[in-house]
Every structure is written in C-alpha cells, then in structure tokens.
Image (cartoon, rainbow, N blue to C red):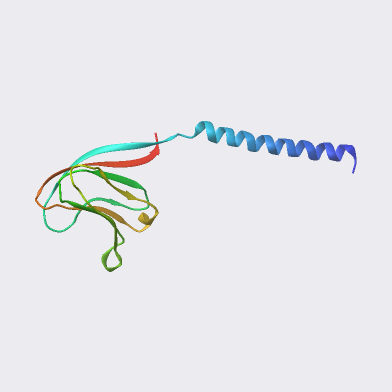
Length: 131
C-alpha cells in the first residue's frame, strides 16, 4: 500500500467518526428530558363492581390514590376471559397507594376501583415523557 492510499483511508475513517460524533451531539442537544406530568382528577364512582377510571394501550402510566377507606384498586390487563388482575390494593386514607401500568399494556390495561359507597374519588394520573 502506498502512503496516499493509507492517508485516504485515514481521512475516510476520520470523516466517519466525525459524522457519528456530530449525529450523537445533535441527538443529545435536541432531546427533551423526561419528566412526570401529574393530572389531578375527580371521578364519580358508583358502588358495586369494579369501575374503570383509565384505559391504556401500549403506554405507561401511574395512578395515586388515598381515599375512600375500604375502596379496592387494581390494574386489569387484557380482556374478556383472557384478563388478569394485578396490583390489588385496599385504600385506608392514611397511606398513598399507587397503580403502575407498564409493558403489559401493549394489549390493554384498565385502572379500576371498587368503592363501598357511591361518591367522588380524588386521584392523580401520572405520565412520564418529554416536556
């Protein structure tokens, strides 16, 4: 190999490395940082069976609850006979309880609550994403 061939190969490698560095820098500078978006919600819920507060597909989210005491919360994945409930918790008006929906929501996920008496429920819907 001649010195001219080696110089050309080094120059091509240098340009390739510079292009990769520039692409990474542009992606880093242009990216929005992730943050949590909290939406306070109030829902009227009838007593009886579980009631759906939020339905999610192919996304992630959380919900935070505290009252009413004795209410039961859960995440129901899937539908019909293929459904599976997870994260079943009972509210006590003392500690905050959270539901979290993750990768399983590619099918469908429902955040649900079952209250002992009909009434209003205050809860927080939390999503993460770019600003």
